[in-house]
Length: 370
Image 1 (cartoon, rainbow, N blue to C red):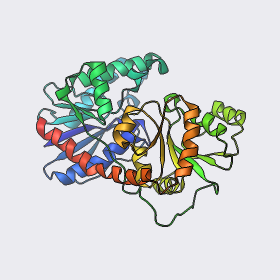
Image 2 (image 1 turned 45 degrees about the vertical axis):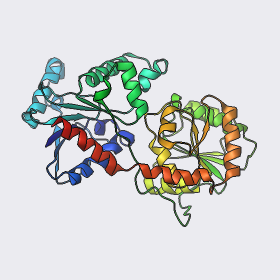
Image 3 (image 1 turned 30 degrees about the vertical axis):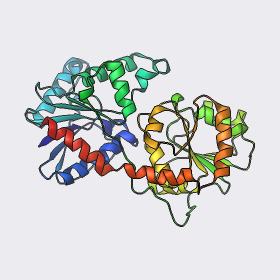
């Protein structure tokens, strides 16, 4: 069985859930099926390292535009030339399966198409996104999903959203849950190396775009009566607006930003935290939920469909856009401590998920198409 995996995502993000999915499952699928041969097709500059296995062949589309001068004369036909180069690199696609990591399609007709869908944030909250680029992406995504033979959704939440917004037939949409790395675990001895706070701290991990509701977290944290606690934030540098907000809320000395955090340090951060806070308004899955629970870290999360689906009753849920609810959650989670029934339930909950299971279920979709 031969599968072409369009690795566009490896050019788009250096870190993130999407690239991690394929980093984890592609080598595992090759181990599970000795007859599987994967061609990982990449284009241009790579922002992330590629998965490796003896049955994974990497092929890179040359940047033909750099060779065509003067550029203004060649520009109209560059897409056509790139398509021809891609087709030449891959040979005939017929008889192979095309798996798109980010909404691309093969040029040849009659090639089974598998598309992974991670969330429907643009469709669910269109007012948060605007511009011609967003409209173009949404149209491309819709066209690709509707033409696919199999659509892999990372949660039932995403599957329902795809069917709602695109009218996709249920039999073409498959739920294949994600997982967390085994590196995230309860550490017997708490190693505080690299943790900048000696005070009890809450932990936030990831991007801080609007729908992640980081602003709500800051507001609630500033109003919590215990001022001996800290908030550690793992992510990109502060924006100027965030820096002003921290100063306005008088949090500049209680909130610490950490960048360049690897999984080993992140595991220690989860283990040492009083709670991991996940205030997002919408998620397709939520790998950080599993990471935190696997480390025995209490979780405060917005009550949204995907978090309830993935984490069950283990987190302490708050209502989105209710800062007072989160203030109360801080107090309750500190009172419960890290040996609560909630934490014990989380350690059992994460056993339901594994990358081996994700890889095997993806393989089953390939086999059905082949």
